[in-house]
Image 1 (cartoon, one colour):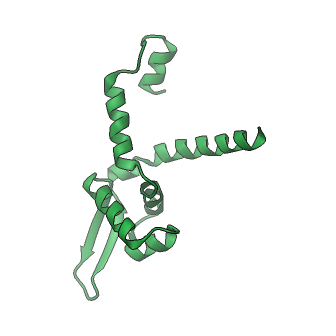
Image 2: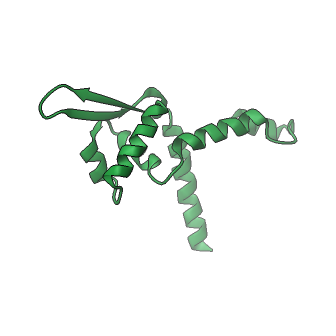
Image 3: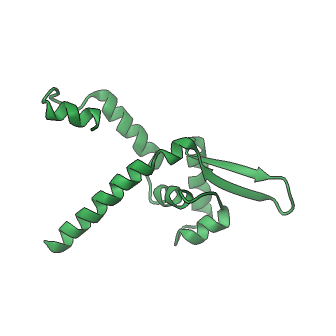
Length: 122
């Protein structure tokens, strides 16, 4: 059980602590946007080249994929490895921090599927 959920159930807090708000803001800054979660999900299965990612994520432009990969790399979610060969080979993988997002993705998928079902049934 999460620390926040435990505190809420025990009625120990009257409002969400600032450190939780900051942590949520940090998380959203790293994963927000239309393309970051699809990129992360695509990399959960292992390393990918730029072209593989572009083919796997429908409708993403090369420019947008490049921008999002750079942002994920700056935030230590994605690692970029360049192989010195001809032609140059570049592969992207998730860092350990990126792999730790799987729990968050699972929770989001569970919620999304349940919410969609609820909305469709009502």
